[in-house]
Length: 238
Image 1 (tube, rainbow, N blue to C red):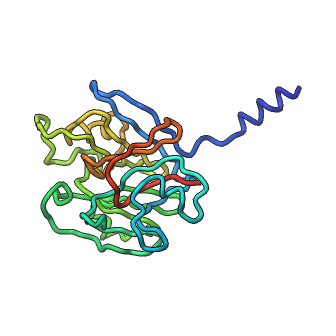
Image 2: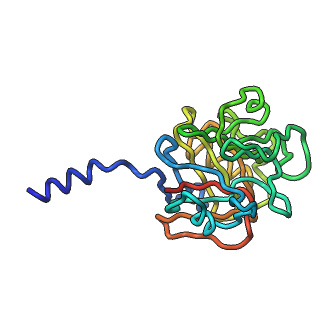
Image 3: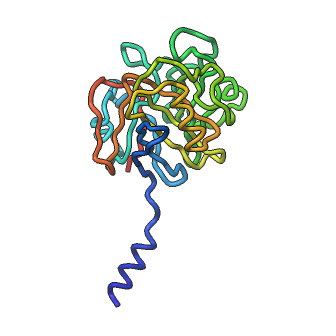
């Protein structure tokens, strides 16, 4: 009966804290990584203990306390020196304040938002809601624009837009227990990208991270995108 004991042990294993899969929606390819925030070690990464910018997925795996890397993605816009454009909080330490005013580029296409993480909860907030609610975040990164706001697409997204890029972002479940990180494998408009979160994934709130520099690491898929040195990143570590 040894085989039965092995089978029962297999059934008893907890579900993976992060699962990544390639999906097709409206004829376009996306990769979505779903994270169980209640069990995953989901964290933001920007600088190493020596003050240098980490900059790549490979260096995350070298950080103190990290014994393995399951998933990683760039997580917010950054300046030429790779410092965050908007609010950034890591391990309870704020290195950039919340930016509430409109500005140039996608970040300033209000409303923008903040992705908040604590030990067992992750949520995307519209920026002014984040300021009003003052949630207890261990880590937070501000980016923009919002993709989905309380079950509706960002009001300035145009169905007939011709601006297409590889894009990435994050959406969260209403209860904060699940975060879904998505990168498009085809060039998409904001409207198409937001619609994937709203109509396919059925997520009430979602936030744009970036375009052009969008990158993904997934151990399960054997994928590690190379290219630009990155600013803030989000990862599931062991």
